[in-house]
Length: 265
Image (cartoon, rainbow, N blue to C red; front, side, top):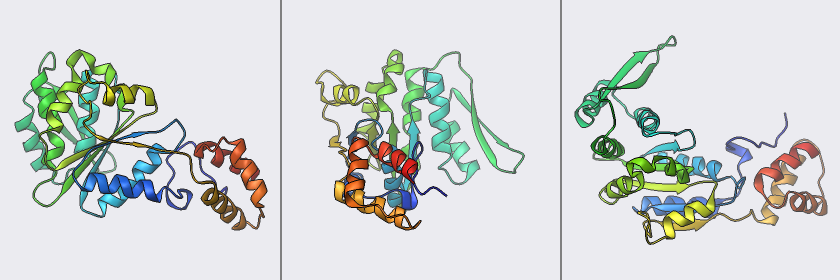
């Protein structure tokens, strides 16, 4: 089996290095601060996030990953975000009771699929969503913390909140985040210039609201060692010069390093 993985979230032995970056993100969220992560496309942001989630889960964090890319309307955000939060809850009946008390205009529906697993969905009981419903929904992650846990929310492709401009989503979310004591956030996305505009423009709601971090290319030395180790496991020898040429040809972009290495293998 080809030892090099690309085009999807990389985990386990296929994920390498990023130790410093992982530690910084974990420490930032652990200390109660929020963080925005800048990186070009194909630099492995999402894979890094999932590694961070693994670390935090071992420290009694409830980790919620949410991708804004499929969001196209306030209603779609409510459905998808509610599902993401519901998947992290324990005690279905208790969660439904809490959900119903907090969100009056949304009816929770809990069904059992053919595999015997519970599936959560919602129905809207009002003709249109109002700001109060959105604000109450944004309080849901904090309810998962309880007395002994913390919550970390990972908003991927966060620049796509532009789609929710009609409900002033940025301002609504910012108003909630600053009041939450047990929930912290990591914001990331593939359009760095839009994210920087959101967090560095004094006129935007998220101005100076989070620490900022840039994801750079992987260290050449560590990447060479990784490539050689993977090749050697299949009795393939890769000289330092050959590895450097592969890395340079890939522009030091992790995704393309894995792709070219896969082809070479």
